[in-house]
Amino acid sequence: MAAQSVFEPLVARLRSRDVADTSDIRQLAEWLDTRFEIPGTKIRFGFDSIIGLIPGIGDVATTFLGAYIVIRARELGAPPLLQARMVVNLMIDTLVGAIPLLGDLFDLAFKSHVRNVRMLLRHLDEQRAA
Image (cartoon, rainbow, N blue to C red; front, side):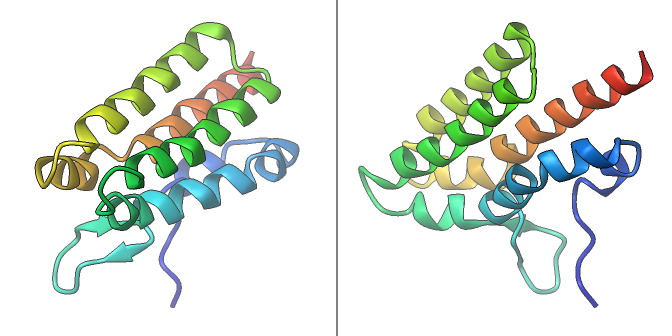
C-alpha cells in the first residue's frame, strides 16, 4: 500500500486545475523532505537530508531545487508576501542546514519544501473559496 501524500487534506479541497498545476512541486517537495521513513518510527526524511550530507555543495544543490518551488508559486499567482515567506523558509533551511550534523538534524524537522508547498496550496484554496 502506498503512503498517503502529506498534501492529501489540502489537495482534496483544490480545483482540479490547481491539483494538476501543482503536481510537479508537490512531488518534488515529498521527494526532498518526506520520501523515506525510518523503520519503526514516524520520522520521515528525503533527499534534502541525504544530499545535505555532501559538504559544501549539498545544501546549495537542494536550495536550487527548492527555488524551483518558489518560481512555480510565482507562476501560479502567489502574491509577493507569500513568495517572500517561501524564500525566508528556504534560506533558513540553507543556512542552518549548512551547519554540520546540527543542520542535518534540523532538516529532519523543518522540511522547508513541504512547508512552502503547503503555504501555496492554502493560498490556492483561499482563492477558490473567495
